Length: 318
Image (cartoon, rainbow, N blue to C red; front, side):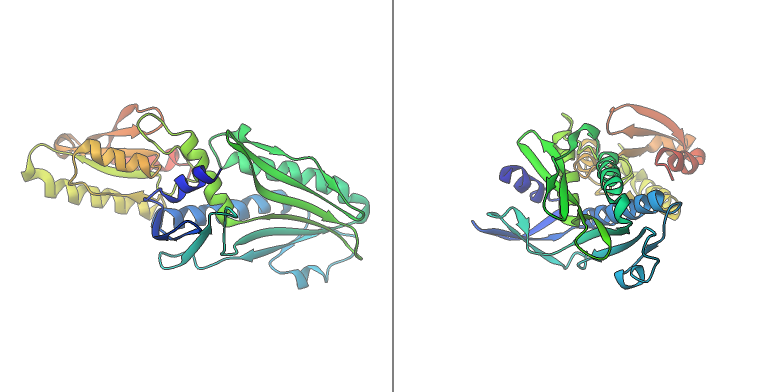
């Protein structure tokens, strides 16, 4: 397990290692990790909303939740969010296999005591489904056996990697108070590492880091295939224009070092988990047609520039 987690931290497109020794690794997030963390939070909030909006209110802090009627369910969200930017330094402990920085996403519920077991069972399944929906291996996740104590019980959502299970979320209930409480708790760092571990395990022979399309930090990349240097500047301007139009539609796009040979450009895109690469060439300047490469299948399709904005939006589920 330790070896696999170190492999994740060594993904230099996602992390910048500041210092490393036998006890710890200090690193900062790169842009790809920051976008991925944002995607995790967005998908988590969307899921909570989907499962609760038609059934009971959800508040952004606990005090408001305590003002509701005792026998009606309600929820509240608790978040501990460090500053996810490229200056924020994280220390990973090699012995404990975790980070010193506390980051937390927690959904708490108060429910009628007669219904607490029903909610407890239901939300175990909900949370397992959510984890399956953000990775490329839905069968990776399972629910542990329930551990009972006098007035509470807890269960873990497990990611069952080849090298052993990893706890990714804890679901617990407590009836030892005036209210019955249910809690679903996970950390940003665990989610980030789990998604990247899954991507590494499913990487292709082309070294494509296979991430779920909805979670990938960059949906589309631009690459330039050129033979004649006199067209290079024009192709760069075209790539910048395409990128601007896609980002206007909230499609996360990247244009790496286009001065590299085409194969090197594609390898860089694969390493960062880009789902599709638009390869523009000198022919694109004359007929408007370019190739769109699917990183998973390595198949190309021909697209016209006039149709790409709409087509890309459909492809990426926006």
